[in-house]
Amino acid sequence: MVRSKILITLVFLALTTLLSNVYSQSNLPFDKKATKQTVNLYHNLKKLLNKGIMFGHQDDLAYGVGWKYVPGKSDVKEVTGDYPAVYGFELGRLELDHAVNLDSVPFDKMREYIRKVYDRGGVITLSWHLNNPLTGKTAWDPAPGTVASILPEGEKNELYKSWLDKVASFILSLKGKNGEYIPVIFRPFHELNGNWFWWGKDHCTPDEFKQLWHFTVSYLRDTKNIHQLLYAYNTDKFSSKEDYLLKYPGDEWTDVLGFDIYQRKDGDEGNEAFIKEADHMLTMLEEIALEKNKIPALTEFGYGQVPDSTWWTNVLYKALDHHKISYALAWRNAGYKPSGQVEYYLPFKGQQSEKDFIKFYKEPNILFQKDVTKADLYK
Ligand code: BMA
Image 1 (cartoon, helix red, strand yellow):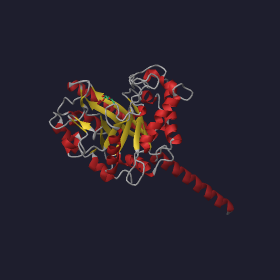
Image 2 (cartoon, helix red, strand yellow):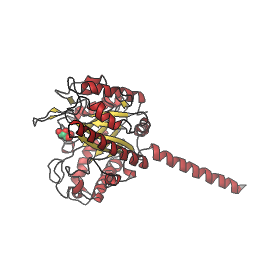
Image 3 (cartoon, helix red, strand yellow):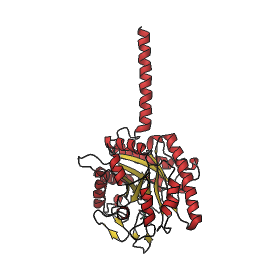
Image 4 (cartoon, helix red, strand yellow):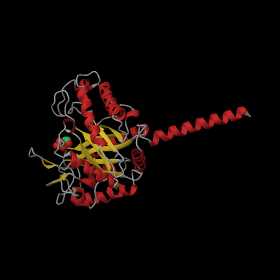
């Protein structure tokens, strides 16, 4: 009798442990102290994978082609009547205490945009093109030894911590109406397998990169007590799963897995190459995310100035359609830059791909603001 009771208790314990492991693996961010809204977001992002792909845009509310800081305005809204579902913003220069980021967006305005987005149930993701802490130049200064210099014991570790303090204050200043912290998908050190940033491919070893990631996450989570972040590991183009995972910090350190891709060749050949490449990488990404129980996303994409009037339905949609990824974030509609260059990735009123973008918008599995407001991602 006593024996069978013990046996039943043991079986019960084993089952509940198993179930709670399965639950925690599939439904929770890696930060065990993640806030309620962050856990809900994570859970709902996974659920939404079965419904469609959220459409995102960098700096959508801040400016577009030919305008800046007009309340409520958005190139996506002007063309489709709806806002994107995901909004990217950029923290570069926050580390230097500047009032505006490297693309001239005032951090005060950014905070307001983020609150608005959260209020209507949109998703926020933050990138950080932080300066080179060793040389004082930009993120695009790949001086050897920079990553090593900011690790614990490195000569710039204190400086790097002071930069993280500033990022932490900004993130902690993002609060909803009831004082709750606004969840954010943070994607630092993106395009880590390219050679253009100081944290890039040849500028640190896999071990150094992983240490950098672990240090950054631990500092924000454990020292600064920030528990409203989902962390995105984000490469550039990659050739195999091994290639993708070369510097992967580990399942206990990431929530979202993504990559960035841009179309650079025009014409049918360029289009076909883009579809093929994107499709192949998305397939690998989905498999990795499934194996690791993470959320796959196309963290950045674009075709500069969209010089093809049917690119959205004829190229991008063909690459995305049969994939289960959480979101695809188009890069920024900068318009004329101070350098005189023109940079944009989404149509605006009168742009040649405008009509086709509306068709793309109407695809039931491409989700915009109205869809995610309905999905109530933070509840
Ligand atoms: C690049 C370009 C730059 C910008 C940088 C950081 O891709 O858009 O103009 O400064 O991203 O946002």
